[in-house]
Image 1 (cartoon, helix red, strand yellow):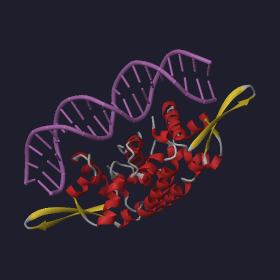
Image 2: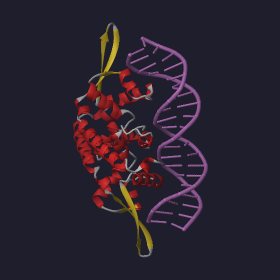
Image 3: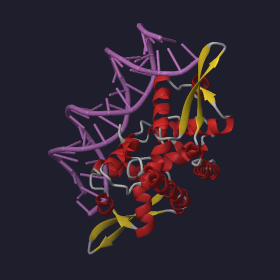
Length: 128
Length: 128
DNA sequence: CAGTATCCCATGTGATACTG
DNA sequence: CAGTATCACATGGGATACTG
């Protein structure tokens, strides 16, 4: 889950090796919670940190901040503060770049649904 | 790189929680070398173990066998043996299921190429 | 060639505590 | 609320040796 694909791909790019387009795209959303974050922001618009954390039952504070940081760095989401009754509130929302991943994610969703449908007939497919 | 997304998703499926279609699809190709393996088999047809290992300069024997095993388990590739001048040769090739991932991978390829093109203007995007 | 098994270190990540 | 920092343990994965 730890996104070592991201590290690995960024390293290639630093070496001026740009032959890793699909790996780079994969690195955009292969981190823990990243698909969940992207889809939630897409459907809900801007969300606050704690709202995002509550999305996944077991998301730890640490992992959520780490994932958000990477996604900001990658230009997928943006962070902005706002004062609500004299208290600072932080919002995250998808950038255009982040949104442009949605067609791919939709395709993944469809592939997965069809595949799982086929596999449901086979009780044992997820053992091991 | 280690595909804990795969473990995590299979665990959900074992719990009869099927609300993870996109994560499941992601788990299909987010392992180390999996994109590379799929694309190579797609373009070259059946390939032998050592040919696959030579694809990536630093692929270790252990990781390659592990990835291939998972992909067989997931139904993306098939393994079959053949006798070549009295020696056993092992071939791997994409199944129809594996091939059906190609449109998604192509989309990832295109997204990545466009994105990297845009980012090339910014020298610093891959630092950190 | 095509694996399997073992050892072992580096890294990821959960838990916890602290800050403004 | 929205973080950052530190510690401690579990796991991933490289290196190496062994098998048919």
